[in-house]
Image (spheres, rainbow, N blue to C red):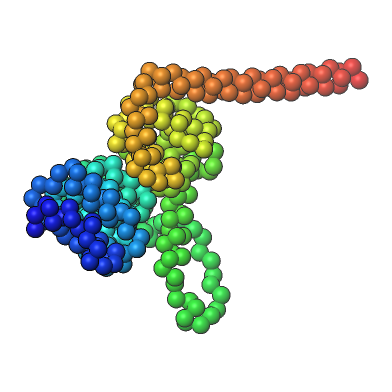
Length: 335
């Protein structure tokens, strides 16, 4: 089929409904050896308005066809990639129209189903491969054997019931195990703390703790990395936007792909579309590292100030107690 055939599809009234037009346009496009930018734009202009009107089968057909297309239109591919994995899988596995940033954003929005399909790509960025492994096994750390972990919680006697009732619920058991493991990683001040990321590089600690979904784990790792206290790290990450986190990651001199991976794990709602991702990357590139270091120095100064104020209060309290003791001793001697 020639390129002229493709160009005329948009004006063919005999093509019938949106369903046939959608499939025919993509089929004609895929037959072009080297489509021009204009033809790519024409396909997007024609198919994207029809997208919500076509069936799941048509979307699946188009996704499969474009996955084999060397010059697939990026906007249409990204729209298809947001579909359930049953539709998007061929594109997630094969297309070169999705960048590494696109793939990370898709994993952040859709989780394991999309991640497992992306893991099948032939030349996958190692950072993305690590992210997928972290999602598959969220702790990615050495923990106690399963039988030992089970002993961490006191065993409660089960009430007598029927055999059906006593049958364990796998979902409940799995959540209990996660809860016990999380309790082992509590930050200082919340009980006995066991740092399961001890000895790991800074970025690995930040990435793995961010992916646990527990803010306190990441805040503890960030406090260690920046040499600030836990309260300051919490204030950095509990803001409504990622602006403060941006400075923290820049001060640590992380690459933009690593910084984005952490940001999307902590603020998934901030990246609903590719434009938001592009904005993050632009802001990260334009943020001068020295400016970020200045902000971190301010956090450290505030941490030190709080520590000094705390020591002063403790000293004053001790002085008052000593003074009260001297007064009581003097009273006893006088009597």
